[in-house]
Amino acid sequence: MTKVIADISVSLDGFVTGPDPGPENGLGDGGDALHEWAFSEEPDEQKLLSDGAARSGAVVLGRRLFDVVDGPGGWSDEIGYGAREAAKPAFVVVTSNAPASVRLTGLDWTFVTTGFADAIAVARERAQAASAASGSDLDVVIMGGGATVGSAVSAGLVDTLSVHLAPVLLGSGTPLFTGGSSRRLVQRDVRRTPNAVHLTYEAGGPDR
Image (cartoon, rainbow, N blue to C red; front, top):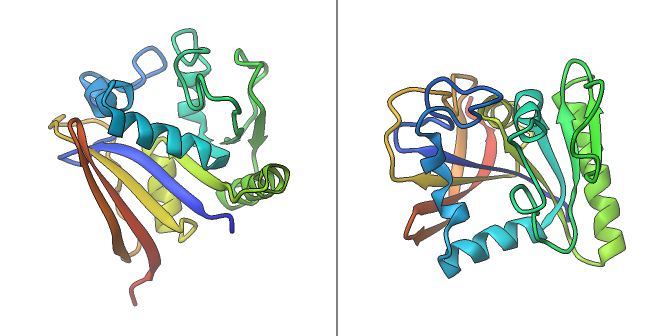
């Protein structure tokens, strides 16, 4: 069964970037510390990363994050979602307007301009098709940015929230949550690795 999983790294004070993020400074000042776990050589952290990529049938991201990863200093064959993996998922970008061109032409991009719920529906279709082709259950993974993940959780579009809690205080930056309706989460898993604590929650309905 295809699930929608929101997956993001966050600081102890609740930020998913440091101060002054932008196309040339995607994670903001000091924000690289959030993803040290993903670039380490620790076996447990590498396994978490590879397991996450392997379960991904489609990946959803917002336009700001797309502009960073598709920019000159963004993803490459060695760095990026699914880099060095045998197969790469489809990528679905939520945006008000599609870009005129794409640098990363080797990846499968779909741009949805009719809202987040429609983007999730498109990604679910792509993940289910990938599941049928591979013979295994693959999921939709929402990888960010922060506004994208926060909005998806608040809107009740997420089955599972996976948070990688990095041992850093950034002071300011892009917060993961900026309000929204009350929502109860059920803790399903906690894993400690040298560079982060990895928390998995089942997302429930809004509290009334």
